[in-house]
Image (cartoon, rainbow, N blue to C red; front, top):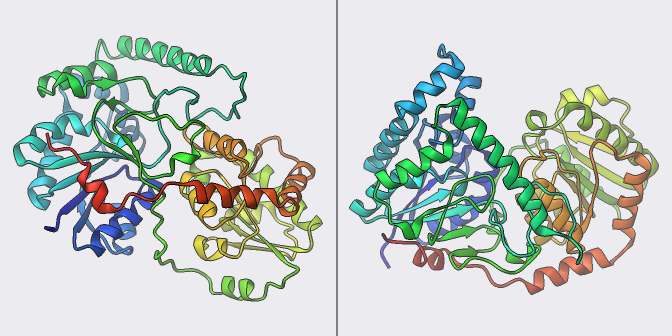
Length: 447
């Protein structure tokens, strides 16, 4: 079998990248070349893992990149006026088109995996995929974004029951989105995101069988194009899926290396049979997306819990800034800004997490019960927390309202009741086998 050049065009977020490193490593091990197209500030993060990078400094069009540009650019911009002009003169589209074609010329990929979160790149890429005979698929680092039977939008923290009205939650979401579309259509004089996508879809002569699909959240979807979901299907509320969706398994990068304080190794080595290790991490971007007041409240309650549960040892991934503000940590709490998560999880009894999918998958594969406190309520974390409870893999709480008493009860419940670990064991045994990288490549689409 000939080696391929795989180009991963991923959303510039570490969580999205981490989800694909296992797949990428498998491809390299079988002789393929792997390249990531990303903004330059993320190149060191990817390079240290061992993969090539190519510069991709533009924003996908029709996905509100203007808001990011307004926030971070050093250029002089009159926000509304410049955004309006960008839309009327297709500046975002043309800049993205130019940079994507430059990447294709430089890398000459045989397969492209496009992050579903920047799915409008497909519209730009389509003529090039045909002309250059490049195989293509979407890669999804969250669970399904589609509306399906017995499924809820990812931002819902509802644990469904037989009485749950699934349609209600979708209709509520669609109604709010409809109002936003009307407002943006008025603001931008007919050039809202939806209208731009529709216009460019037909300008690029894309066949109707791939027509954009708005029956989902967070992105523009396209029909009949392979979508590889880097997760087991068993985590979903239901087992139905679209014919072009493939749940390929977790593909965790178990070989990842990380610099960290070696005192962590000393703590792990000193654990006795009477000690229970509780690891807590709210992810890598809690300080940017989370409500600071709620996070401070949560950690103060956790400190009180640690003071009560003296037989437990706590390792907490937390910045010095937050740790100093909370203060009064008991002696059985150890705080580090950098924690080798896989190393610590292997010796943990419980994982207190924000509910990010990468963290959930790692804990489950290691047989660790979860206690989830979603930080970012806009995306997947609330739904992941609900799925943890739904499948009996752990419990969930609320950062804002949790008291140390209720948190302590949940932690004690997870420590004492063996059925959580049993459920995780059964869950892992019931999962279908992973798709290999070869099987994934075979299912990519040649237009």
